[in-house]
Length: 278
Image (tube, rainbow, N blue to C red):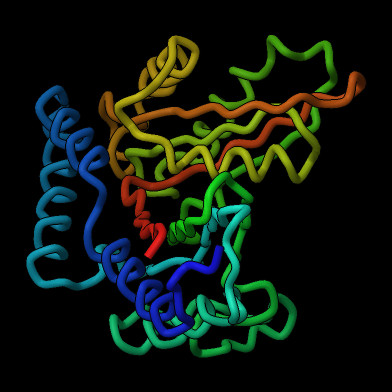
């Protein structure tokens, strides 16, 4: 089925969701920060959480980016198996990124890895990073998740031995402990376990899209132990080192146990748009 989706609509939608993601946090993140501020007993940590919440309000009220690091732009695209488009979808999203960089505006963050030359518009070889998934139906969903370098740089991956399942929790805690205040806590932790080297990393990043209100017993157990580290908001101490932990798994080789931890700062930015039918 050919759905009434045009290149122009995708370009405009890309700009819209980028603006939303960069200037407004999802409700589950704001609610988690509010709960943390109420619970926090450390006066320095409480003051930091209040400052974060004020920052969020100012950004929303003035429609300006929440953080000066507007991130590298990652897109998750779900394409219906019955959908037919008569234009290059990747080209349309990339054009939306170029225009959004100028109009929102966004800080140009995309540089060549060796020459460090900046493209000036957040696009380049492999950027924006677009991940595709085929789904049932004839719809199209585009989600953008800007990722800042401060948190990304503190993420980690390891190829454990199959006998080291009991070491998974320790690896997560050591990663957070080594990161300290560098990734601007309180954090959201995405954990990928299994698959391959690259699959584990992909799972850990996509886990950051999960609702902060939904954690299973294993995730809550890790969250509790992370918060017992005492790193606290902005690394200044307190009981709120992380707001949530989300774990995604995949079957792996019998001789392998990949694990990745993708660290996200409190500004867990993402926004989506869905086209369905007409």
